[in-house]
Every structure is written in structure tokens, then in C-alpha cells.
Image (tube, rainbow, N blue to C red; front, side, top):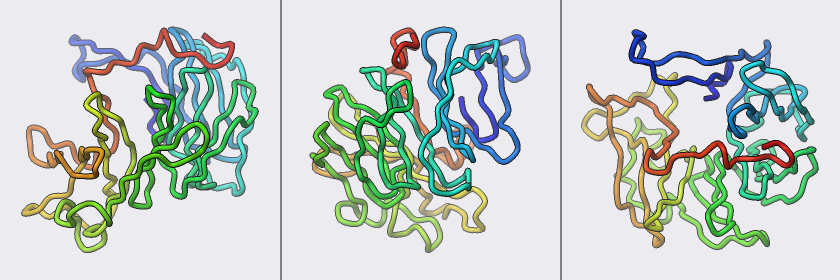
Length: 258
């Protein structure tokens, strides 16, 4: 997992008070942030470190030995405004969602830019089974691109959904700030919503904010997650990993790293 101030790998352990134990961990240097990480096989990881320099790193675990590092394009030195999500593809390349550049950029394992999809507010990205690219943005829309760069599907919050689905104070009554989008086996798309946990605005208990929604290809909201009460208070959760779709790290690779 990446948690802005570092990365770590944990495993279940019923003998501990927390129910898990940490296999290894690494903190970010002062002024830097890490928001995204993926495993490569059993003994390597790829992560992106925000800051100046802005860079991608392949690291061996648990020794934390650096295997390769290459710079990524950036226009400012502010680490918090560079990116949030990176994902490996089936071809062994890296997709970087850059809301600084308003684009998804594909890199090879040596840092060469291969392709770019212009997408203002790009926040979350994943490659679909058909090779298309699904992008969640913080600009009220989710968009699917083909490999030629064309938009083949889009869900726009303000155009397609009833405003009653989201209500967080007055600021987010007419918007949803997408964090991640994931295409489900049934063809629908799950979208997670961001709620600022440091804001003075709180979720209305009579009409709580959604943490995630599911929309069909026509844009109809089929399902909403609003879990703000104990014992299943998820709080301002923004990322979902479906347990029915486990990630097999043995199949993930990045260029020559396997």
C-alpha cells in the first residue's frame, strides 16, 4: 500500500492486536509523497515518488535495494499536485494519471514516453481487458479511451445523474470528485467519490454522501455505497479493491522486470 507518507506491505496475522504484521516499509523523504505502488512478481515493486525530482522507482523487496530510477515530466516543484495513480499494463508499461498535465501518459520501463491521452483532471487510471484506458477525473466525469486516443465512452455527473445522489454540505451537492473508476464484469463501472476529511463540511446524516456508485453503460446509477455508521463506518474511503478480482502479482511485470 501507498499512503502519501510512505509505502509498506502487510499480511494477516491473528496473533497481533491489529490483525496484521508489516513485512517491510519505507517512509518518504521530507517534502516528498508516494501515492501509488504496484508489485512486480514476488520480490519487486514499482512506485512513483512525487516531488522534485518527480520519478518512478523499481525497488527490490524486502531489502529496498534500488534497481532502476527514471525522471518523470513535471512543471512545478509541488509534490502534492503532481499525480495520484499509476498502473501497470498487460504489455509491461506504466500508465501515469497526471492531473498536473491533465493527461494519462504511458511510459516504458526506461522512462520513454510512448503515448499520451489528454484528459483534464486525470486522477485514476486502469487498463481494461480490451486494451482501452479508463480514466477517473476530479472534474465530474469518467472517460474511456481506445488505443488510438479516441473517447469511446463517458459518464458525466452533471449531465447524467440525479443531483440527489450526492450531498455534502453545499459544496458537493452538484458534483462528484472521482478518485478511481473500475469496469465490472457485468459491464457497469464503479466510481469512488472523494470527500475531504479535513473540511469543516460534514456528511449530512439525513442524506449522507456516497463513497462509491455503480453506473451502467447508459449512465444510470444502479447502486450506491453510503456506509457511515458503525460497525461498518468506512469514512471518507476513496479506493476499492474487489475481493472477487484478486491481483496476481506473479503476472505483473514492467519491461524486463518480472
